[in-house]
Length: 140
Image (spheres, helix red, strand yellow):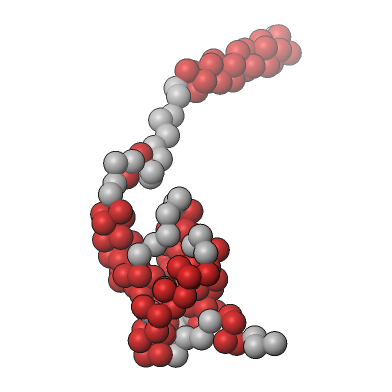
């Protein structure tokens, strides 16, 4: 009798698993993208959002995540955003990230004149925070 009961339990068990799998297959989780809420965002709103983000960043992970997200967009961040990012990088004591911000700007702009314009506009901030560009560090 115990063998019979054991075999019936073992036969019933896969059905229970299949029912759970079928139930969970019917439940489709909804995915929300962070870009959905910003689809109609103007450049000014984008700039304000990232300036506020970098002003509130408390550790290196947040600063780097914000830079990654900011530079992923199909636009060049405003000088105000770059300044906030530089200040955040120095606040969390990461000089290398501050230097890399300028490397990101250099890659995003269309030509050298635009990059030079960013460097000129941000020169007071660079001097205040003691940040050199990669070109300044590696003069060949």
